Amino acid sequence: ALERGYSIGKFKELSVSLFKGKYIRFSEDKKNQKLIPEFKKKDSDLKLICNHIEKNLGPITSVIEKRSSAINKKSKDDFNIYVLHLAPSLSNPHHTLITCGMSSHTSKGENAESNLEISIKLPKEWKLDSTSLKEENHNWPLKSLLDTAFYPFYTGAYLDIWHSINCKGSLPSKWDYESTVVAPFLGLSDLKIPKKDKEKIVEFSILMPIYK
Image 1 (cartoon, rainbow, N blue to C red):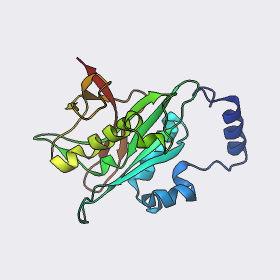
Image 2: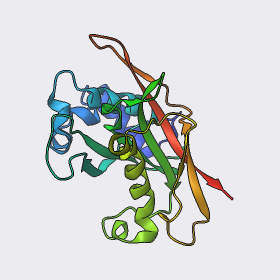
Image 3: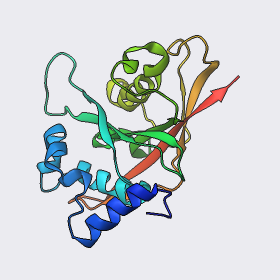
Image 4: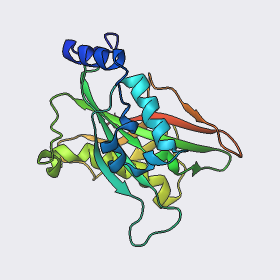
């Protein structure tokens, strides 16, 4: 815990819970299983994804948003994308928002395919309360994250690491960049999930702005 830069209070809390054998992973908490029903499935990829994030980056603070791929009517291909929030710590003084569920859809190119989860980091001063997230100046990173996450599903486009996305006109006027690049998330390795036909590789990425 100290290596990840937690506060003394958080370090004590984690140490005591581990010593008593009472530490509960985010995906095993009953409250979170109500928010993310997929956690209850025995072969849940989302559960493995959350455990991987928690193991490498630290405790997940909350689920900040949920969105379904279904727009007008449901189909067998529908899936949910959840946005997880990791609060700032001493070693990582940023809010981290990361998707869980984007990789349910396989983005396919001519001779390649990808299963991505994407993230974005925000300054620790950024307001993420429910009131602030109704305001354009605070909610655009969350909107950009979700728009990007569903982009391959709705358009059929192939999206992978180092691809760039034009976001001109979708940001508040004071933000002077027009594109983002899907970069690797350093410190969060790929997650390999065994499947019947072949291994599924979940890649973790972060959205980075491209300035003029």
